[in-house]
Image 1 (cartoon, each protein chain N blue to C red):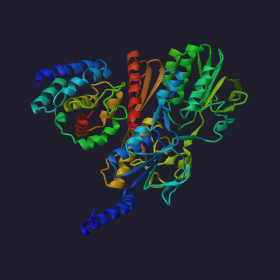
Image 2: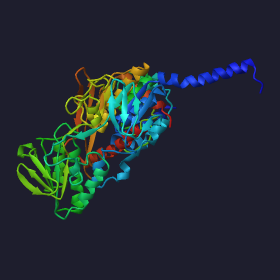
Image 3: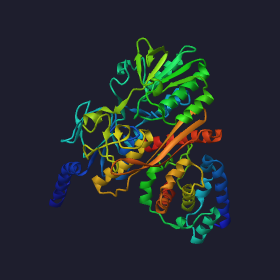
Image 4: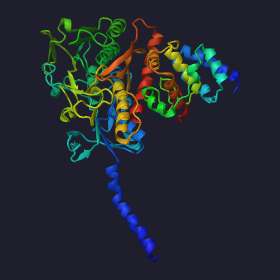
Length: 419
Length: 139
């Protein structure tokens, strides 16, 4: 080919454009980093990527390659689900344009606006969304710390802990005792411990019907209490002893080596002990300096933290007001946050914040119950607007329809989170 | 589309939906979804009369983009893929019947506490926008 002046100029311009283009692009495309690929973080990452159509670079930092849902993990314990039905990959999210980084976020430099990774290096952000879920408060249950979680599992982060608790339940001697130390408020999934008691009872009724369940609870009452107690009476009469605050349920000490639980000074030898300690925001929220006490206070309108308007906290880790800490809540908050973050970075329209939550629980086969509410953003907090709860004495048909609905919700929310 | 075809679809929807909500999605949604969306005002008033509701909310026109935003509240449970796993399918519904269902939930004449709660705080324009958005979702 002969090189004439026109070709040369054209080639030079193209080469120069190719060289400068990536830099211009890197400066121009705003960056969102999301830490934590659960119900809050995965939803936020997916919605921002999907709705910004390439106008925002979205990176999700999540250490695990398979996400096991905490919701429905009690149904695995009860024998209604297999573990592999609770596991989900991030493949569809990556295909949807989210840069999925499997690593631990170990620090946040708020001045430089970068997130440090355990594997080395750091990721820059314009807006940071933290959705790290929960960690446990040190010393919350006397005698227990995370080094004891093999002898006395919490099973409150789904995965190997859930499998361990199920294995211990299966290995219980005939007529043995399953103990649970329930957590104080506020904690992840308010009906969760009591759905778990129901699922353990369901398993034992079929496999070890003379076994007993002992629950030590620091609270005087709990979520869906009347519904659970009605169901325990109907399905598992005489099997479950619930010791609430009034009877010393909060005065508990465990000995993981001896496998004993002391409730208000009375020591009981047990075969399985499920310790669910008091909870706090996942550690990265602390490291980012956006917590106040155990949780990260946020503004209701966009889930931005009170400490730093460029850092948002979603789900269990946030202190937002009236919403329970649930996967549904986190998913709902993530959409409000995604809409606000997109608006701030690209000028897209920001609609008023609306939130909702529903929590389904299974008490026995086809005996589902639910509680739900709608919420709005006020200057002070996320405030409840209206709500409902299943009634005691509902027909078997209603309870079965509620359970079927919960199955549909599980498919819906996992698809909504992960694509 | 004749009124008679509509009447059949409506009757089916009414009977089955009230008997058993999840069945509604399986049995009736396809029937309704096949129907054309271009109702005359007179058609819509007829439909409102059949259901015994005020026609005004059914005549409101929705905005697809606004509906897309609002749909976030729906898609935690209702799958945009149109898959059914226990929660009724709401994609590709006829817009008028979508509005009818939501208004009935709002009036609490259609059973389901979650839907009564969600619909209870939606205005006519929001319902119309959701109807417009879900009607145009492709497979």
